[in-house]
Image (cartoon, rainbow, N blue to C red; front, side, top):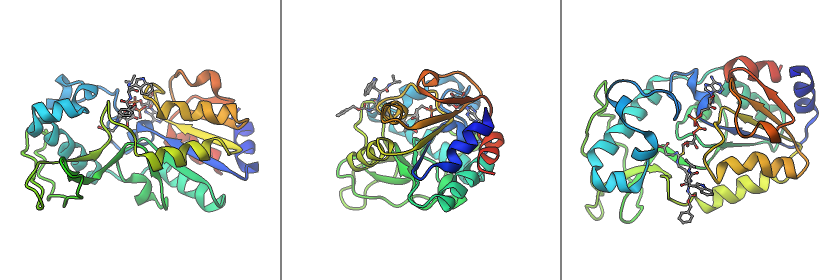
Length: 244
Ligand code: BV8
């Protein structure tokens, strides 16, 4: 199956690569549905990644994101991220869309990944959305509460530059991703549980537009039925084999 998938990818003129938490797992960055470790083991990410959680306990939520940012800074891109950058180099005009808020695609050489859910590296004023400076990462080894900085313009709290549950995705990013998925020969979806919308609809949009959809995931997901190829395995193992 991987040979047919590699052949389809090799013959494609227009490629979209859609990546999610699974592609960063082999870099040591926990996915959303991995068992969180240490202090965070008792929290549900879907509860923490909300405006309500930040309003209720800004120090806890900011501390969680600082812990995650510190984990990302300690991590390095893996062979999966490098293979995605190789696809971009080989197929002019290919588009990388990611649900991830880390910077591992950029550090692997991807030029302009579309971040549907924002970035750990773009904090902003919670009141005015004015971009804020990234503090020196203050995350204790196990995370824990950290008081968020304050906006230099209006003194409101600074929040993480991510899209929380219940918040709309950045319009320009979502529309660029939908347009690319509706007009590609191959969509390669890597490491998503396929449960968070509207991002999880992207493989469906590509399939409905007639694209070949290749999924890489060690497990079954709700996207299996719309995929042409379901490659069971990890990003760092299978992506280099696809892009040989
Ligand atoms: C919104 C940033 C509306 C924050 C994240 C239908 C339509 C629209 C919305 C909804 C809908 N139904 C429900 C909703 C609401 C909600 C939603 O989808 N809820 C789910 C839980 C049902 N959606 C929203 O709230 C979205 N907003 O719709 O707004 C609106 C419109 C106008 C005005 C107001 C409101 C916002 C969603 C974005 C939330 N933010 N992240 C942060 O990072 O903290 S989501 C977060 O979880 C990730 O970004 C990711 O997108 C998502 C899922 O995570 P995955 O990436 O899939 O990772 P996960 O851990 O789940 O799975 C990892 C996978 O990798 C697994 O399958 C595993 O097997 C695999 N894997 C593991 N290791 C490897 C591997 N694969 C390969 N290699 C490996 N080594």
